[in-house]
Length: 408
Ligand code: ASP
Ligand code: MG
Image (cartoon, rainbow, N blue to C red; front, side, top):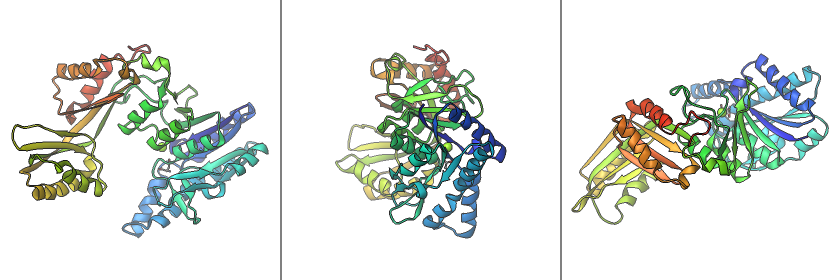
């Protein structure tokens, strides 16, 4: 008998029929004698609907009240789910975040979980009930309802699994697992059986949308094995676990891309101490996240600086950088919006050399120009023209033979 935490996303509980189907599935586990803790999202579209309601009433909705509003989405699904279990002749009880209690910081709409009280949950499990918990929400030390930010239910599930020392944490979603690349652009993309936390963190931050990145960080910290799988088919999904020997023998585990990127170049900046900090301090103070940075060396006293920001922040950053450039005596600011970042990820890179140069070679063979490069221990990223994204992803997926189970 194990203690299992399962999280079902919005599409899995999007209608009463789907809720009944999920309940039936959970009951199969209960019948086998497992203790079940179920975390649910709001019905698909519900959090968006509530957000739109708020925006129609107040321009910048008050964040405390926003949390009171948004938390209702999950209240609907957990109560219906408990009813569905009861209708099937078993016992269940639902809890909101503040009833549990899931204590968070007070940063409304972006709160962080600080602790989880497991007493109530354990009591109810001991009474043979399925315990159903609202994802994405908690309560701060003053009793205010908080939410964790969009996609936060994954984090609720992992935090509960860690606090309860669950045997496993399963995230049920509308895809069958984590793929070697986006199956929508590469038909030979393959579901990955096992992947390390670090690789998943890179893939999640680089644009793979299966798992919320904060939940992966938490799973890594508390060594919670995560199983990402489909609510609609009964096959094994992808296990996200600690690094294993077999993973190292693979050169590359996945290819990913991000089109929400833009570059900004400040040209002919006086090259002297303090210049980078004069440029990047105000940018970070404005809450803008810079990803890659390149500083060119030029003979003489002037240099060029190019960096990337999310495309959604392009205009705001350009305005700010234009002011900074005037202050520091740079000659020109220019930007390119139609770029994309393509990356290869794999823990095998630590022990194998030549992976980055293979990537450059593959892109060159396709006639794709590389505009920027950045590397980490387990990742190589290249900025290219956006229109070549699909071509680059397919070529890299092929070159590293990711369609094969045993790709080397
Ligand atoms: N319902 C919330 C959202 O849509 C939280 C979640 O589903 O994870 O963002
Ligand atoms: Mg989600």
